[in-house]
Amino acid sequence: MFRKLSDDYLLEQKEIQSSIPKKEERLEKLKDSVANVSAFLEKAKQYTKLDTLTAEILNLFIARVEVGEREERYSRAAPQAIDIYYRDIGLLDNFAETDATTEQAPTPQEVA
Image 1 (cartoon, rainbow, N blue to C red):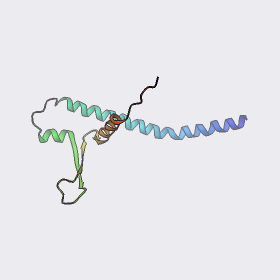
Image 2: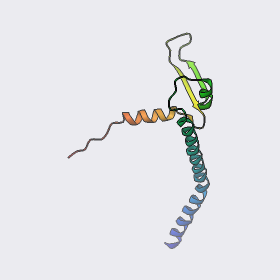
Image 3: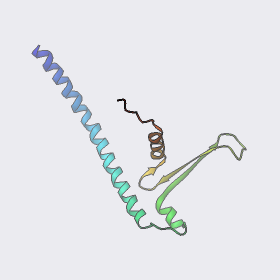
């Protein structure tokens, strides 16, 4: 009985030890992400009111714009994917999708 518990304990310890580097790497990525968002927000605070959009402002905030192909060739009304990658924080499209799915999720109703 003791040997089985000891073996289970040792196996669990090995699994935990092997997962530590992955979790530390994930933590570093999250810290970098927070730092990047902070840097982006500091830049954005300088431009609270924009009268005109200049090339300087675009270059400050936008890293690149990717335009996908149209679903139907030679059609002006066909949908087309456009991804805007911001400096410091990357693509914001993922955040918009998660917000939209969160808002659309039905809320559970309480039953008395």
